[in-house]
Image 1 (tube, protein in one colour):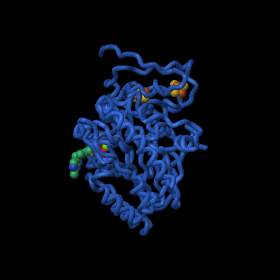
Image 2: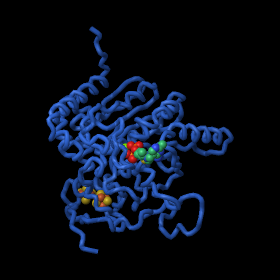
Image 3: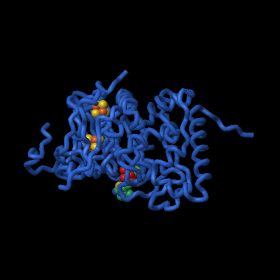
Length: 310
Length: 90
Ligand SMILES: Cc1ncc(C[n+]2csc(CCOP(=O)(O)OP(=O)(O)O)c2C)c(N)n1
Ligand code: SF4
Ligand code: SF4
Ligand SMILES: [Mg+2]
């Protein structure tokens, strides 16, 4: 068992960045770098992280880093990996670096999906992390394919009418060797899944729920608490998919096994300002019920549920 | 590699990693986390959860030059050793 004491002291994400107070991407980068170490090449897809990484001539990240266009996470990784393989073939590398793509939900669910899909299908050897704050935060909080039903964004002022898509399932359908979901409230689970991803060859997809204090409208001090409540209410399920099998992990596993009681989705909605409009509207109850059904459906699907046709 | 601001003394086409690339972000604080070492049980939770890498692992000291005052350490500390206190006017 890994404990906090085992996490390296060295910080590759440096203090004093441009990130907002309580930024989930900052914390996630810190922990991911501790898991992967300094022999890592980072590819940042256009997002809040492109800003908080620092701007020329200063960088908040002590790793070789490429800033790439919105749609190109998978394609850029493919190029970097090809370069690494060429250098390795010529004997110019002692140890091959880990290639890590860091992208938001906009850059993953919507704009980068074809590029990511292509890289995954080619079996490109890299780790893709989607930090999912369920909106386009950097440009002022517009809706994305990851925004949950009922959530306010500037482009869904009365609450989003559609369900979010389940992109981790789309990645599993690519038959890649490792897919995992993580939460910042469970940092050791995150750390261990990153280390496991590093040890596996091929395309690895890791997705983290990233509660954004200004975007979701809650105080920065509550960032971990909101992350925790997402898991405890089932709105964010922790699992890993490996060798054709899905396993629930950590707090989600305990919930599915009935060791801890699932909290109502409402408890999660109420601690964020972005659901205030929908909860106060006549459609509030319906939205809440639809989100509860979404949770049950996601759990059934992960358990291998096959729909019955008549 | 040195992360001091002084290490960025020359022009290059490559960005240099430094602490404080947004300046002394401690100036953003409205509330300051104050830690009571008597109550601290060295669980390391504040160190793990600080998004700004502003708490040291070995001595659990808060780096007020960069701590943005997000308040996560106060909320996550299980013993109540960290309390957010309003900053004086600067
Ligand atoms: C092709 C293109 N369109 C629009 C933009 C402007 N843009 C930069 S970041 C961003 C939002 C990114 O959202 P997401 O991927 O969810 O990351 P977040 O900002 O939420 O961290 C947008 C729209 C861009 N850089 N490139
Ligand atoms: S979280 Fe609290 S008890 Fe734990 S190390 Fe930090 S100050 Fe000490
Ligand atoms: S207030 Fe926030 S930035 Fe400051 S030490 Fe605590 S967790 Fe870190
Ligand atoms: Mg986003």
